[in-house]
Amino acid sequence: MSARDYDEAVIAAGAWEGAHHLIEITSNGTTVSTGAHAPAPIYVTAHGGTLHGPWDVTRLRSEIPHQNLDSIETARLLALTGHYSTRTAWQGISLLTERSRAWLHDGELRVRMPTPARHDEPRELAWDAPVLDGSERLLDAVLADHHYVPGQTGVELSEGMDSSNVAISLASRHGDVLASGALIQEGAAGEQQQRRRAAMIRYAGFRDTALRAFDYLSMDPQHAPRMPLGPHEEIYIASEPWLARSTKRSWKPTNSSAACSA
Image 1 (cartoon, rainbow, N blue to C red):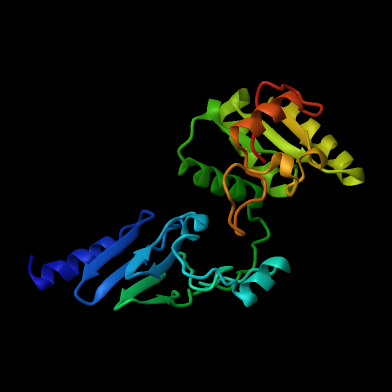
Image 2 (image 1 turned 45 degrees about the vertical axis):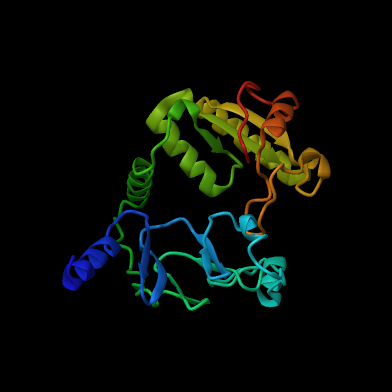
């Protein structure tokens, strides 16, 4: 194609409204660009003139000549004060999120963050605004964009505000075909959690499995995942043996035939 047609094709591909990563290979090097609509984050590094970009950062362990930690990002992770950044826990590995770009030329990798997005200031709420109705309609619209099989879907029902709203919206859409699950905390917090969960399960008819968090500590070697986890991943990742054990050791379940990952 002509240079003009090529440029137009690249612009059209980058403007696609779906989640995507655009890979462009030219005489000036290799460029990976991400779209603006929730693309899955990928980790990029360059080694031996090759650009590597998996979704799982642990797959890059053999691709970087040294595995020195990034002291700033590591400190942020330990302090639970994450920043929106291209930095990762390792030097030489960068994170590509929405509207980012990685460019590899002559063995040198550069990563560019997106330009700042414009933000609107909150408007004053009208006295007769239907807040609850608007919130329900917005959540229903978001759920309608997700593809899932209701009878094979598990809802995390930790009984915080977020999980409760999502669970009720799903229950109103699909009835009692959904499964729910949670890790139960210790002490007074756990007692409150159980009371709220019991009321929600009675109301929605979830097939529930509850596990006592103390029995499945995230750093306990007995329940360590079979695959290595990156520091940005969830600390509770289910594997098949873990599910088999958890189903048998359900703690006060409504129905132990369903097991959900927390």
